[in-house]
Length: 313
Image (tube, rainbow, N blue to C red; front, side, top):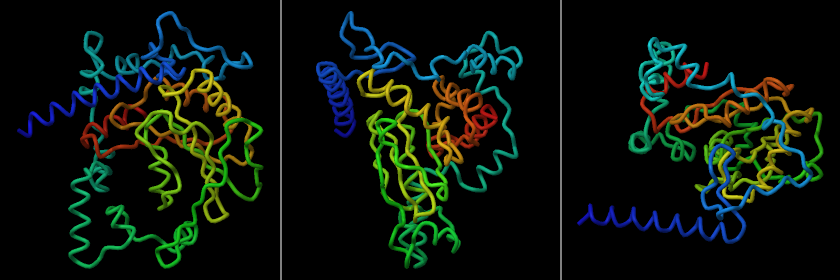
């Protein structure tokens, strides 16, 4: 029966995940998180020391004033005895935000998007772009030139370098601005970059911690996009996680050609502790503009997305 097959597949998936964690632990790679016990870590083992004894700046920030439950208590009357989930449901829905979400179909699911794509095909209005992204409107000439579109086929985005240390960072070009995408592991940074550049240059994966270096992408020789390693949970050795976090701190505070940082947030979960830490770090130490991007909005309801945006503001 179909139901039995589904149950069996879930059990098989659970066994496979447990086996992967055991294999990772035996190789010295653990599911590392600075915000909870590291699953799969051998009994009695501790986090590996940082190579040069220097912790990432973000770990030293005082986060006591940035607790989400404190903010919810301020926004929800009588919320002291309620769970955070109940407090979130009690938040008001900003109708201006909700109207924008509904007008732009920001919560359209993948199945709904597929139906929109079929409508375009039936009317012979589909293109190579809308076949992949049905909600894309007509792209202006200026954006087409920037993205390197020639007849709608050639892409202008290409991988140029991966930096795992400060010495490996490519030379900055004063004439080429850089834009960085930061966020927790597996939040969809690489997929977002591919959608914005209409390319498949950035490698994406369902495994947290797949991006383990600062990946630089050139956009038609006029712009550089940087895909940064995810912070928080990752399938990687603790010393390696610390190393790429230190590199991120140095890049975000010392790169003169960096013009903007987009902090990508999972719309289902909102701001987690590592996200608030990153925003506090950029506010205190960064000399660059930054914005929050809510990703994976197709997996939440419009009212919940409106509440999430309200809470982040």
